[in-house]
Length: 230
Image (cartoon, rainbow, N blue to C red):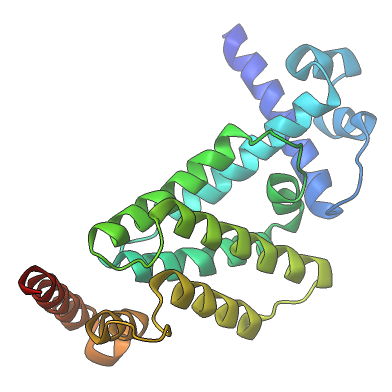
């Protein structure tokens, strides 16, 4: 019972800090304001978190829990490149809807330090780029592709948060530019079958999701057969 009470108090402090962060993205918040909102004394906050940075780390963890919960609820299209495309959009959407949490999660950095929850989110992306590499869809190593996507996705999201204005056209243009770069769709001498695969993957509604998936499977088989016979 005591453990549940302590857990409840800790959660109230995190939620209170999160509410202050959400209300004033990018601004400092006072520990006194957090304690007042949670209905506890300052020693209680230090008991649970040790310092203001400890509380901030807990708020970051909470933000990533929200983000990963949203990501886990997304259904896979069955195509890794399309899943990357949809994941990009979900990332931007989360940042714009939760600027306070997002600026803590991705805008506050310490050299050489990457929060463990941040790596959980990045791991989902690395799994998708690894699948794309297995399908011979990438022109660069899968780890490099994941880093390319994540760094630009964060940059586009932070820019829109800073401007306090959504810019879906910019986001889509950068997203497609990144995907073209990692798949080399627009490169000179690019394999036409690979280009056709990426065109189909980027427009799943044209043929329908099932038909697009089949087309990609057939084109991938043809591409591998061509490579074997070469």
